[in-house]
Image (cartoon, rainbow, N blue to C red; front, side, top):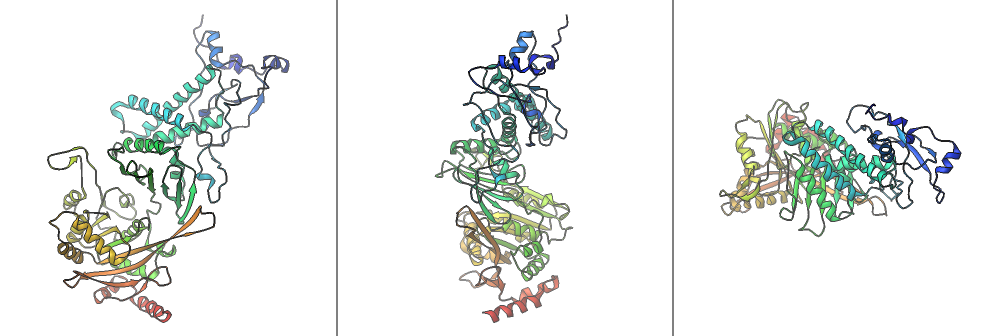
Amino acid sequence: MSTQPPDPSSLPIFTAFPPSSDRDQGRDQSTDQTRVRRPAHALAGPVDGTTAPAAVVHHLPTVPVAAVARTAGHAAPPASVPPQWPGAGHPAPVAPQRAMPPARAEDTHVPGSATTQAATQVAGRADFLAQPKGVDWKQVAEFRGLASTRLAERLGEDRGKDVEAERELGRAIIQEILDDAAADLLHDGRAAWSIDHQRVLAKAIHDSLFGLGRLQPLIEADDVENIIISPHDNAWVEKTTGELVKVDAVADSDQELRENLAFIATRSDSNARSFSPASPHLHMRLDDGSRLAAASWVTANTSVVIRRHRMRKVELDRLVELGMMTAVQASFLRAAVRAKKSIVVAGPQGAGKTTIVRALCAEIPRFEQIGTFETEFELHLHELPEVHDVVHAWEARPGSGEIGADGRQAGEFTLDEAIYNSFRFNLSRQIVGEVRGKEVWAMIKAMESGAGSISTTHAANGSGAIRKLVTCAMEAGPHVTRELATTKLAETVDLVVQVGLQTRPLDATGTRWKRDRWVSEIVHVAPGEEAVGYATTHVFSPNPQGGPAVPGTMPEELRDLERFGFDLTAYLVEGAQQGDLR
């Protein structure tokens, strides 16, 4: 006698539909239950949300698959076949169709399509940024935890060696978990998930395990640049056009948001961070290069900002097209970079300082070897081989554990160390990213070591940027006097490019806003009188009518920039026109 199980299609539940009289006999007479023929498991269909085939409605006898298999003396037929996961690279096979157990009204889900993710229309809210409906996110978190544990067990020491293979294994594990859950529903006689719900659930688990969970739809949107959350149910996105739009909540509670952030923070092997009451602030680079900053326990609510770097390959001419600067300003800055002037780009948070630095770096001759030094990678110059031939990119690393005898945590790597080590790399330019504190000394060291360095800092205006950098320098300790800091900065910084930012409402609903950005000042810095320590000259002064700065006073030492392509004539003509207007 054969020990092979029968063909699943020969089981009663997969056979042709009985005559209408037989169907009526098999129906529950107390309720008019309607059954839907669908693929055996949602994972048999595309997880990317393509519309399922139209369902054919019939009344079927309610025989659970597992029960039929046990009655026949065989193992239960497979609940599903491998899905077409995002990036799997092959079409999904077609699963056999089977009936579902009778649905109870209180258990039936009718979620929207995973592709459209249609949201209730709210003024100013884009449908494609909405959260999928009908998902139990606590269940998703449980499945994610189970999948993460199984994945770690099966990978063992191979974890992190092959990302694509790891994701492929993760997909298989998620399928197993949903197979088990679907079989449990059928065995218990409870309402089965609809095909659309299973697709949404599968993608939600995958996004939570390998992506950012409920934040993933926002990360995947091509026109989203920044994501702002505080608290969990108050989420906004800033588009590449500068428009601010309110979107659906990304968590059901601050606790859920904290747990998701903690999982994301510890998941990376190369960029892992701690996020807990002992480490209430989180700053990290995500797998796609975005920058995540979060705070909790020491703030009223859990707050999150994710900065996406959409304009990685950008030039000054493009910023002119966007209205961030004038053609004369672009001509001046292009010549300043080529003449190896050291530049600090200043402005408020979110003003576009990093974008301007990328545009300035695009003017560096491609044969020059560049070193970048950042707390988290944001410039991504090393990912633009078509723009820069050689880029050595350093990223600082926070330590962990107890502080050692040297006053540092184990594994810590600072920007100062990166700058020191870079002197053996034959660099033509050293680009220090954001200066927020005593790392200003890394910037000063870079500017002293070679001309043409570029950095960013936060400041309200051009002159205030120098005062801010002096304060940052003095944070290094009592051995740094104000006179020392002022002298060093006056000798190393040549120009301050100040970026302005203005937010204005687009309508009366309060759900749509627009951010406008422009270069509001360009200030020349030089050693000055002893009382102040430095002197500033507004090469481009703030425009009284708003918008990009207008020509001011050109110092004699900067007229030489004409040799590097600066259109001095256009500068003088535009300045005269502005003088006539004033």
